[in-house]
Amino acid sequence: MRADELLQAHSLRYDDMVLLCLTGELDLATAPLVDQVVSTALSCHPRHLYLDLTGLAFCDMTGLHTLRHLSEAVHATGAHLYLAGLHPHLQRTLRLLKTASSWGAMPCDDLCVLIMSEGR
Image (tube, rainbow, N blue to C red; front, side, top):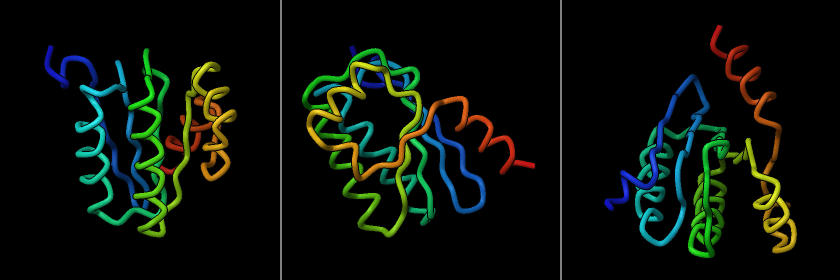
């Protein structure tokens, strides 16, 4: 299977924020696609990048490294990264790795409310 069949990435830009929604699997085969999507999102210099992982069905160690790299890339631009829709297993893994402490995290419902209120 091709990477774009294993992982779909959709983005929405509004003002100084970008919402990226990942659906599918984040692993060795799809990590380059995530890197590409994030690079494209950061090219418009957002202040806030919201990453919705509600549709993420699988994440291996390469996926975890990709999230870490993504965090570093976002913070290097001076933007803020927020994760939403984290599966409890992924949230626990990130907590154990002490990775999530540098990221804002919010329930997906809060993210939807934020997007809708910003989009008025």
